[in-house]
Length: 197
Image (tube, rainbow, N blue to C red; front, top):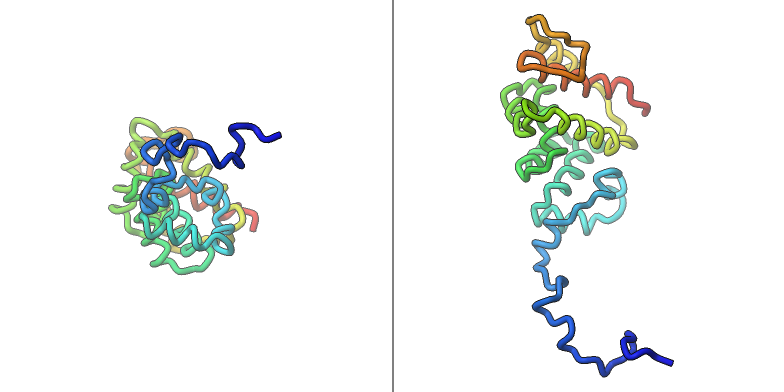
């Protein structure tokens, strides 16, 4: 016996669920731009080998999470730093916290201090340092299966940023304007050094 509301009931009134009420009529650009891609943010390599069509549609639509994923893949996995940084900057400019964080950190570690500070400042660290902590946690998850190596310039630039003031540079849970950027860089470099490959 077939129910009156069955999917096989072809006599159903088509005005139910009309196109005005149907969320499936979202333009593709908006659909792809707003995809959260949380599964792929946590495991970017899955998007490198599979789901490339989805990734490409999201990139074309300007999805900041897709640019974060592609940036990590290009920068760390494929070793194409310029292409990776371009995607990470687009993610940051799209106001995606994780993209803003890693782009700012990489700019600092590469010696572009003004740009790195600008992007980390976008995360409002002076009023909420938890945001960057959450970003580092997500970055560790994203890079879990990706081989990452410490570059000499990362270490040298981190040393350059060490404050001369009397800050407690070993207490990573608190920071001031004199030591914040140094601590974030050190946190990232230490993570890379200690990461199991």
